[in-house]
Image (cartoon, rainbow, N blue to C red; front, side, top):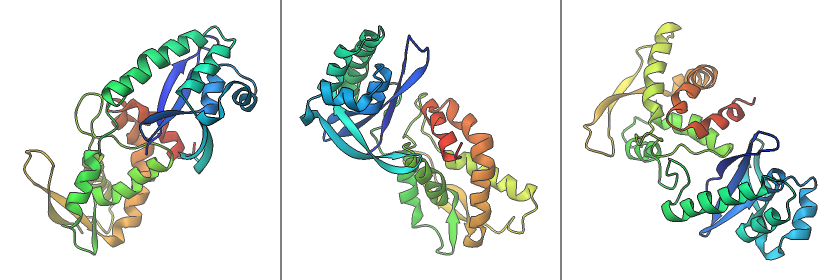
Length: 256
């Protein structure tokens, strides 16, 4: 269950405000604090108590930088009620954007924007399909990256989608694999050349490719490379053209 984040630019503050949503049993719910903030309520809890109907208010755990936290969610009718009562000039613009663009798009296409985030990512499916090919004393870049990168991103609310905004599938393991191999050479690691190969399968018509798997002893070096090198130096460039939404989560991953 992924938290979707949309950005609305406030005319008063000229800033982009995050609106986090969660789909529960086919219904779209909004993080109440985000809505009251963008609509200019100084006391969000009071605004919800005065303007929202209780049956459209729930508590739910969502991933945040500090781990899963219980937040208040409100449904569409309650968002509308808060919008109507808002004193901000931009409230009407927010209402039009939300109810004429965002929600209709989600209902029609299953997503808003250029990326469909409802499908299982190719990255995850390839991880599952190839895991059985590995020697139990070895790991592959995609198997460990699924834990080291993907799982860590999920903790802060982001999941790597199947395809980027250009329509091409997102495969960070390819970028990381090449760079890690060069990294071992550059630091003159004792593990350079310690890899074996396996036939990595894809989900389309592409032929299997010879991919590397490394001894488990290399794991600390790999994880250090991911967090000390690839994420701070290359992740932004990698995701920028593929899925700009990821750029909001990378600083959280690095604890900045």
